[in-house]
Image (spheres, rainbow, N blue to C red):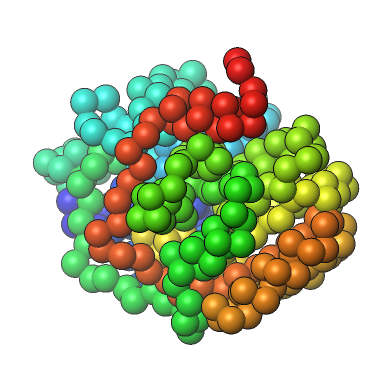
Length: 374
């Protein structure tokens, strides 16, 4: 279905959510139509944040908002959905548009498999009727489902449209970008050279893929890397957990700006714990690149200042390879908790591959490298 027809049938004038590659036609349309006009469209930090923004929209207009998300974001959504929107609490109507990653029978990455299996069951458990949008869904079928949903919205309930792969199309391709010259892959290479034999925890998405491919190209083992293939926003907490228990080892976290923003509170906990062996790097390209390129709020805020306010003793930044090399040397000699923001260009190699090891193999290799035998 063409996205213009889909939007017309929704008859909504406010959208908020977290970008998803399966919903790229929707995300591209919203950015092309509204840009960063927050009166009609807000790119949220996480799905729970989006639900709360949607609640505020309803309270101030009486209209039903639309929240878009990847099905992996249902976990972030559960609390405000069950304790804020639900008809037994405030009864705030909302339409969710959910990208169905890991749909049974459709090949996908390992982090999406279980989530895909339980997506419809999760929605059912939460009392949210769902309509599945397919490639051949007609406008009349969608209109009928939305007509049925209207009676639910009138009762203060919620409903969902679950979007299968390829069900939405959009001909326009908005141009996402930033002015930074250094690619993320180049930055990762510099960081790995500085890290030497240290443990590296990388965030979900293309950063982990580039880390894996760099090791492959250098013919290095992967045993000292933990690739956080799912759990967006939690790589820094994983790194913290390792750093606290293994103070004799230096731990590097390769985070992304969208991931860091998704669970920004993690930085406050890291700053409170102050592990002297942790270097927290945020690769900031100001975009949700792994799911399409929509901008994050990281272009409008001071991440270094946030780190300092959270208690990081050192907060540095780099925007060029030369600057990055100098800052990496500084980070290593401080021997205290350090935050490093690296501004990166948007984009990745067209032939960028994916890890050839499974998450279980990755886990076992890292634990063996740390001398742990489960």
